[in-house]
Image (tube, rainbow, N blue to C red):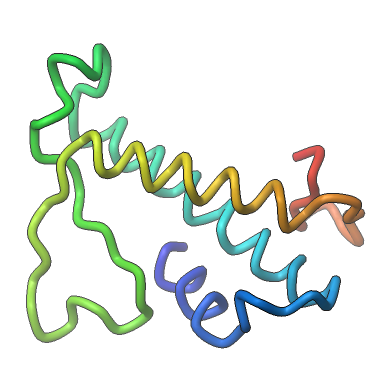
Length: 110
């Protein structure tokens, strides 16, 4: 999911104001944020953040082929949670006013 989301994010312009592009970016960011949320819950005790914030979490991938040659180090729990919040906040901004064409799509309400 993260790799596919990164592919979409890499192929679309973040500065675009076209509703379709913003919709694709918003859906990709929402999926990536949720994927990281599930991963960090699975691989590290997250809460309370004050105690777990500096513990190793999961690697953060921002590009589709990143990490193929080099294995990325695990980001801290705080860094992963910050990335999740950033992805989901940006997704909501991009999805404002969007509607779902089918049940497998994400819109602002989801």
